[in-house]
Length: 445
Image (cartoon, rainbow, N blue to C red):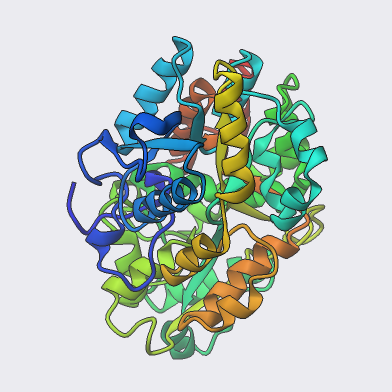
């Protein structure tokens, strides 16, 4: 993997303003690597998570601080590279040999663990410790919830999807950022007439395409549309709001809304980012981590004030609240149901006093992240990237609904079918109804 590659597919926060190689998550140190910082003979609880700096360093330091403050209640932490982690953790959980503390992304994978009784139900623990839950952003809990019960604690940072735009390009054609879907479609014509791609898109990566549908489903039908899909309701992909969203997406493709050849552009190469900051494309829908990539690779695009950002615009007549957003509401830590009583006690102590302690919150902000902690406004305001970080905080904290990325929310089987069908939808080889029929067929799998 090239050292310049950084994307949401690493499922990690991106450090703003750091060299791209330093923020590379999936290509971290060769795992596993013991990072207990005080384990050894006294260690009687374990914790697995991802390698990759600067995120790994923040996780390691949090464990070290906990171990130093609790000499009789130690945690041994082990880091794994992204792909190795996904394989190792599933195998270990399935074999009843999971670590005490399980780092993850919530959603569909957590749901499968909860349904199999492999992670503890933390609902009563949160009820007994209301200060812990009230400290975190309310929108971070949906992806930790299975059938109304909480199986994980939100941690680390929030990463909503953002509509970025190039101010210089907009100024060159005398246009303003879109405040509605109608205005967005009108801008497609404006920019195409000037031989500027309206939107950059790394379509070969597939998950980048998914972000468009996530917003259109919400803006047109409200969050209830995907909630029904996630709940496994029969034929829920055929909801009229879903069909309308799929149709509008293809309208955008047919109007040449995306850069020519988008289906052969990869997000992992950051080529889609370059199209925006070089002015070849006017806009790009991407995760908040994109800001750091553009800051690192885009010359003075960020520092010079050419980068613009806003929420996805409403769709005329749609049911979704304009404050709703999608993306990664947080990362998550669960407790293995197979852990001993003593191990679970230490795990809950770590969730109470170790996770997102003040020093950890400061560390995330220092590396350009927005922690899932309420009331960090003043700390974010002191950052050199204050305007953007405060925008992200407000987006997450004020959203009436924060939808988790679909490929994380759904089961692995359904997620792969989704990405395959989305690719065909964008290539216009599937109709909206055919897309819905194909996805209805994998509901519950």
